[in-house]
Image 1 (cartoon, rainbow, N blue to C red):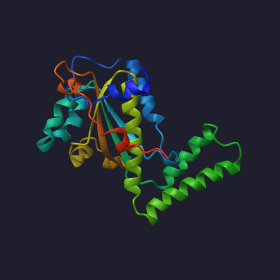
Image 2: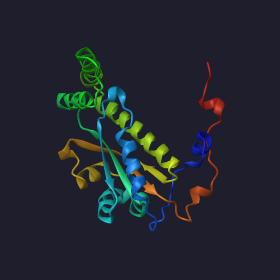
Image 3: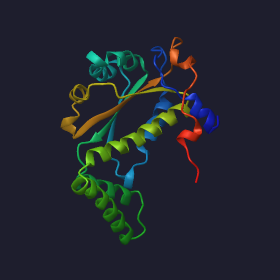
Image 4: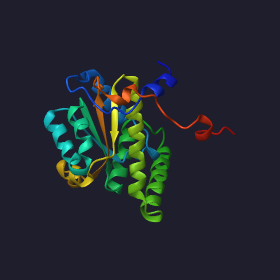
Length: 217
């Protein structure tokens, strides 16, 4: 399957077959995709909660009550559900943890290289924290990079997916005790295999013409 075929194949799944489960080896691949997702300055300001059991999915589904009930079945019938969370803050402890991991993984040939990485990342983190005052928004943008990685990877594995923003953030944060962990839910992805009656699978994809969305210079 080439990139064009992959792009046109992927669509938002509206109805999952609850009897079909993603094989364990592919779940591990999806977890690896999330772990290795790109982020600005390798800031990794995220945490991912993977729900595979009925009890786990029920916890996530608590946030699809009331106005968001139209998303409840997607969460409950999916094989797996991922809650993509952003950190509540990007502080010195997190920056030090990142630098230590990079050092452990052999990223720095010299002490100067290590210092340069630390100074660069700290500069941008502090810019968003103290100057632009948009650190939370900046971190959430990094989470969406992970979302794109997950969706494209799932499509490559022929796994169907539905990204979901329609949920009560406070209810989900409470259900998963995210605030106590310094996190907040940003977006949810239901993963599995479409049901035979998934109407969206039979509809043609609709996007604006290429010349309206892309310019070449």
